[in-house]
Image (cartoon, rainbow, N blue to C red):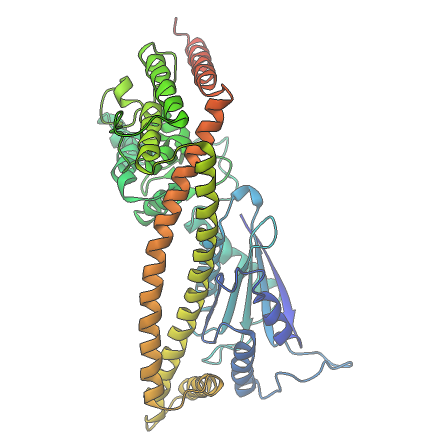
Length: 477
């Protein structure tokens, strides 16, 4: 569960905004966003200044008083995550945005930045002490306590859980779970079927977990990955679903799901890499037939056999890629990996830059449309007057003054979206090929060191020991 602390900002709002919006800490502002203001330090400061001065009647940049009490101009929250929770920057940023909206509402002026420059990701959230509608936010122990409660609730909704307070106490069984047990069904089987239905449509394990979250599953990431169905009482670890559902097995099933294993044996000139793979595939098939390796199914719906063994399939699929892409040696493979790595990083930076531009354009267009809607309105409420002032300020800062400027912005937005779509498609293709090649390189390293077969045999030996110990503990002869 994250830790939340509060810092009242009396005078250094601009410096605080500049600090949290540091491009080096936010991957060039890719992990930065805002609500009711722009996502850059200069504009956000000016827009917060406008709202604060309108409602407080005080200067936003007035110096600190040496004798009296200094008003809080903004409130800076820092939301830190435990490294054991293994929170990704994307998830941390989603949590911060949900927390800000849930805690402070839709009228708050807030800038959110997720910093990724340390071992653990953490969020910086700066809110104006006055909302666009004039609500005053306070910085004290009581409001911090309430904010922490909201932070915990939001994190629970994203599957980040506190310690189990009910450990050691009796648990009741939910009716839905009791009914499943009585009918001979189980949550584990339902989860397996759900996972199997998603394997072909996702690109990696993270996408699989994200799709399960969309379907209402609660996911907990950490040393072990656990998940819980919407009506299920207790979470289960992936590895308890069986050998076909461990994180490693799922990663292989996903990575090689659409490659196929129809290896053409005579269409290519002999190469050392190809011959090594043909030999190791034969050995793994024999291990599988002799039941000397862990039985992992490629297709969980079919009976286990050497033809339905995940390790055999993975090696055969790797050989398919080696043949298809005319990879002649491990040196050739490593050169391609380095080239893909460089292309991947360049594409990632281009996508991040365009995404930030896209978000800024969207915000400017929304504010410009609001400006043209409000400026001709005969009667404005107090909150609408503030919004009109904010829109005017934002448009002035970005040289927007006429409807034709707005039309031009929409054209630029359309072009940016087209570029982003094309870049993302190329990025996905590059990412997939990089993952495939990297997996082949790791496998070849184990094969060349003589560890591949011995590791499979040792893994099965340990599994059998655990099975025998479990039977012994249960009194089964």
